[in-house]
Amino acid sequence: MYRVAITGIGIVSCLGNDLSSVGNALREGRSGIVIDPQRIELGFRSPLTGQIQDFDSSILSRKQRKTMPDFAVWTYASACAALELAGLAAEAIQNEQTGLIYGCDSSCVAAIEQVDALRDRGETKAIGSGQVFRSMTSSVTMNLNTLFKTRGACWTLSSACSSGGHALGQAADLIRLGRQERMICGGAQEINWQSMCSFDGLGAFSVRLDNPPAACRPFDADRDGLVPSGGAATVILERYDLAEQRGATILGELLGYGFSSDGAQLSVPSEDGLSRAMIAALEQSGLAVAEIDYLCAHATSTLAGDAAEAANIRRVFGSRTPGISSLKSMTGHELWMSGASQVVYTTIMAMQGFTAANLNFNKPDEGTAGLNIIRETIPQPPRKVLCSSAGFGGTNSSLVIAFT
Amino acid sequence: MTEQEVIELIDSSLAEEFELDRVDMTPEANIYEELGLDSLDTVDMVIVLEGAFDFKIREEEAVRAIRTLGDIHRFVLEKVADQN
Image (tube, rainbow over all chains, first blue to last red; front, top):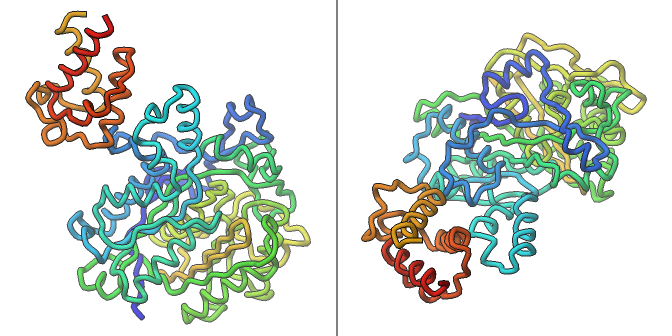
């Protein structure tokens, strides 16, 4: 089995579009959550959302963007930044040993636009050539493959809000098994009202409108729901020995990946599913439970979800948990992207020497008691980290990462 | 519309849609090899021309036979003449 190094990261998120501004926001506890007035007009229960700002989509030509939804363009930008940080030039990735796996579970707007165009114009040829490629959930990887000209693995993985986590885990497995030498992987999540309206209808979103930065309160007793968000996150994984050989800066090592499913309910997580994924990741990592010094939690700020996650954490760590924060308190829930963005955010903290807090946590309730929640930024970086994500249907991913 | 105005509208519409440099848009230019269009772009080319001239293009065989920008000019000029 080969070891897996992290050599590059990149992100476009509601906290910023480069590592420096995202790092500053995480350190300062600055929220990226806003109110979208259009959602109020449309009849949303909650207009709260993350928002990408000041993104320059002209990095690609109009022709290139014709087959790409906005989140695929964000993904391209995050991947370019990650490859640059990794020091991988175009020719180093145009081979059979370089692959792409991203987590993504929807591409809503293109599907609507193509139907509207047909109804409006009365003939399919009026839809245009780009929509079929924009409307697929694999839009991200098919477009990146043609832009980067990689020739290895190329697919998108869909598992709701653990998509990004499983994408990184599966990419690491391909390297571990010797089937790929390097992987460009991550997660992508659209931010538009169209893709969020039915989710809003479930009543799962926070309605704390008076103070948007205080809306998302993972593990807090007064939490009232999640805040939808999105963007794109990329991680470059490489065979450790090859990364060392080429003199790459190794940002961290992905030591373990564990997965599990609940086999229970669609929208309510079980009290043991995620813990089985955590234990599997820890087992592969070779680390003892007590060696983990930071847990980047999935916790989205829903009543049932956070309590179930807390139960899972206590199952693994008992009464002595590592420092825990859910960064969704700042970013909102980045859904398909969140399992990958956790790794990017944690790597940023390791690079910039701090551990970000779980904003808005005042006190636990009965369900979330017994966790060591980080209330203020810690001026030390995380060293041995567990990142967890969980998706609808009860699909769980855990990743163990060591930073030096 | 004069012939020159028709040609200008074709060229400006295609230049905008496909981000083409007008200097390269000579009548002899091969739309695939020299202007960089592909078969998917011809789907959008038809939509652009239909929008610019307010006609319907049903001649799929004729569109498939197009090779140069001059072919497009001739095709559209005939359609415009038929309209009138």
